[in-house]
Length: 467
Image (cartoon, rainbow, N blue to C red; front, side, top):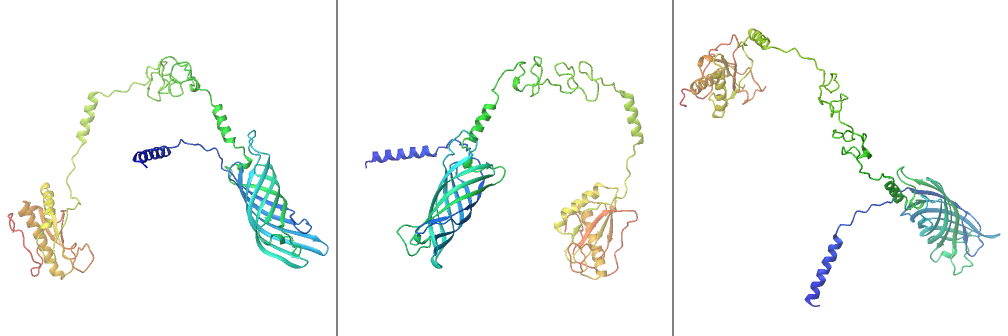
C-alpha cells in the first residue's frame, strides 16, 4: 500500500471518529415506570404420549416484568399431577419444575385507546422439571428433565390492579427419558411425551402508586399523546398590550392603566406607600405610615414642638452642673508577674519585656502605689523560703528603679514565702517561683526582711548601666 493511501485512510478514520464523538442531541424517554405482575396459575394438566391421557391437577406461581410495551419476561414455578391409561393399566405422573418464558403481546400495537382491555399473548421458554412416573405400581421414571415450552393465551383487564388470563402451555421434555413421562415403559416410541397445561391465571399488579400498570397493558403513545395535549392546551401567545405599560394583556390585571403611570409586575398601578392614592396622582408617594392623607396623598403629620437654642443651652448647663468627675480609688486589677530560676533571685533576661510593661504602667500612674510580692516554691524550708521570696521582691524593685526610673516611693516590698502557691505541690515548681504586682490598698506597707540567714543566689540590680 502506498504512503498516499495510508495517509488518506488515517484521515478518513480520524474524521469518522470525530463525527462519532460529537454529543448526541438530548432525548426524552416517554417510557413510564411500571409495576410487576404476580400470578396464581390453576389448571388441568394432561400428558399426551403412548397411553390415553386423563386430566389431572396443576398449580403454580409466576412473576412477569415488562421489557417494553410488547415484550416481557416471565419467571414461573409449577406442580402437576396427572394419570394416564385406564383399568388395570394405569400410570400416575407428578412433576415439580420452573423456568423462564419470553412473552409477546401481539395486539398492543394499536394506539386508539390508553389501555388494552384484552391481550393476545404468545410465549416460548425453557426450564427444568423433576418428574416421577409409576405404572402399575412400578416406578418407570424418576429423573430431572430439561424442557422447552410454548403456548398462547388471552388476558382480560378487570382493573388497573387485576386481570384474568386463559393460557394453554405445552411442555416438551428433552433427553432420553422424554418418552417415559406418561409412565409407559413397555411401549416406548421415538416420539417424546408432552405435558399440556390449560389453565386460568389470576394476576395482581404490584408496585408503588407512582408506577403505571405493566407496560403491555399501556398504549405506547399515551405519554406522547399527553405531552402533545399539554402543548395544545397552552394559550396562544398574544403580545397585545392595550395600555402600553409593558405588561401584555394576557397577564395584566389592570389593562387600562393611565399612560405613563408606573405599574408592578402584574400591570397594577403602583401605590408605594399604600395610602390608596396611586403614585401617578400622589404628591407624596412615600408618606410616613400611620397618618391620614389628603386627596393628593400628603400625610397630615402634626407639627412638632420645636426646641429652641435657649432650651438646649439650659439643658446642657444643668447637666454640666450635676456632672462630677470620678475619684480615684483602689482598683483590683493586677499586672503581669515574673518568674525566677530555682533558688535564685536574679531577674532573668527572658522577663525584661514583662518588667518594661510593669514599669510603664507604674510610671503612667504616679498617684498610685504598687505592692511587689515575692513568692517561693516548697522545695526549701519555710524560714529559708521567706528570705528567698523577700530577696526576689527586692531584686524586682531595684530593677524597676535602676533600669526604668520608677520612683521607689511608689513600690511597697512584700513577701509570702511558700504560703501562696499557685500549683499545689511540694516539688520544685517554676510557676510558684514568682513576683506579683498589684495596686496597693489602704493599709498596705513595706515589710521588713524576715529573720534568718541569706537565701538564694543571684545579684541585685545596682545601677542603670547593668551588671
